[in-house]
Amino acid sequence: MAAALAFPTCCCCRRPSLRPSAGRRGRRPVARCALPSSENSFSWKEYAISVALSAGLITGAPTLGWPAHASPLEPVIPDVSVLISGPPIKDPGALLRYALPIDNKAVREVQKPLEDITDSLKIAGVRALDSVERNVRQASRALSNGRNLILGGLAESKRANGEELLDKLAVGLDELQRIVEDRNRDAVAPKQKELLQYVGTVEEDMVDGFPYEVPEEYSSMPLLKGRATVDMKVKIKDNPNLEDCVFRIVLDGYNAPVTAGNFLDLVERKFYDGMEIQRADGFVVQTGDPEGPAEGFIDPSTGKVRTIPLELMVDGDKAPVYGETLEELGRYKAQTKLPFNAFGTMAMARDEFDDNSASSQIFWLLKESELTPSNANILDGRYAVFGYVTENEDYLADLKVGDVIESIQVVSGLDNLANPSYKIVG
Image (cartoon, rainbow, N blue to C red):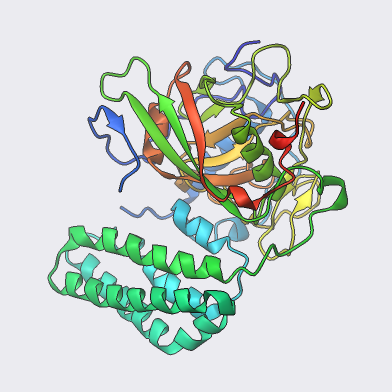
């Protein structure tokens, strides 16, 4: 079977090449990439482009030589005012923080102004630092006023660690204030990242156990009940500027326990080790089609391809919906908790006409999200996102068909994997 085109009718196997024009930061001329120890408003013109490109994704329009396999696009995208309600969050770390199943207003009031620093830094000239200063003061006030409420949201066993983190956060905010006063713009983003890591850790400590029951028909599958982090090392071929690269990926089992659990189980089976990149066209990077006639992972206990249901967590819901797209459910205005907004959004490929056909094929979206805001890009609500590349994501666009995944190794969170099939003999 041709490695690059795994599913003949899969959304991620026969779409036009759409190379992002503004989604990447500048390339760095390095031999290896290892894990490290200007704002545009959304115009009606951009919306029209987004809809046109999105329609091409679903209908398989014969663009740039790809074959046409048309399917109807119904119903028409509704309520533009809902779809374009503001600029999408594109930072994978921010998306993961906001996706945590917590309800603590005090910590969110500290988080938001720190996240807003990213937009403040897009302002030209010294006005950027003036805006950052307002963000820092707002976060400092929120921390001072809400400290007890934040600590009250932590389990007793995690309270001491939470107090230590909040102390570090307070000191760091003072340091960031001095950075701004010294007009040291280059030092702002690294300090912001550090402070948001403190905030994110506190928020993760607020999650008390797994928040819901997975439906009985899927409860015996490998389930990731929490989060896990993996490092994917890829050997780059025929690139004089890049030899290999390690991508750090965070898997979100809170919002996609079946999907993330299936992938982590395959990682522990070494399923992806030695596998080639099978599609890399500037729109997505894809892999996961094994050699042979099968289009997915063959479970040795059954001798059949193991498939998983479409799994979508909607913002505001307590648990995911399974087996149907949001269109099919009539939830046209619903927002997915894990949207296709970030460069390096990770999702499952599947047969376009079978919601429950995903197995082992995965893809990373490279599309620039100004043209694909949440729920206006057709992918949201149709394909299951279960993680984001959080380190070295820019280098995904350097991958080519034939580059080799040398290994995917679990860094943390393996203890959150329930029902691991890789431990079953045979």
